[in-house]
Image 1: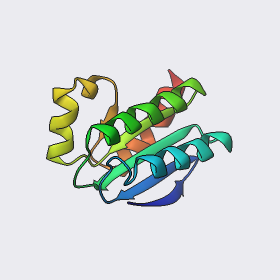
Image 2: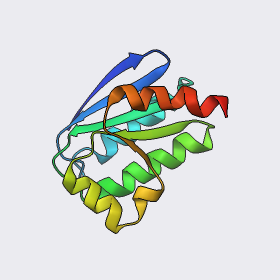
Image 3: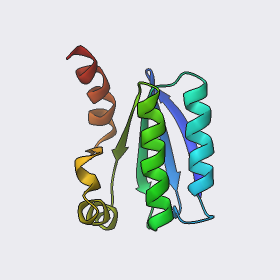
Image 4: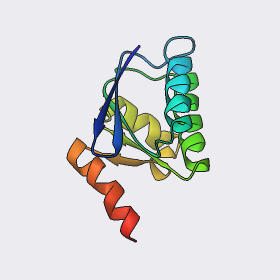
Length: 117
């Protein structure tokens, strides 16, 4: 799996490409998010458009990264979920945990909307 990092304003967008599975992306994702949180980044969007498949270990890692960011007072949101990933999150009831978006603009804007509340 590959991760490309971009800044959109004060939001970090991580473009993930490839499978998030045990030993193939889960550690990479964890290290990347931990490093961002340690640098003080609290607004993170995972763009899953390039992720064809997530296994249980990968899903566990996405949940762990969400928890890591939340504990630091930040928030992690998901972008461009494929049907397969949407179904997986639905079955596991995780769709109720994550904020998900279809466009990057909506995802980025949602941070400023939630900050004003």
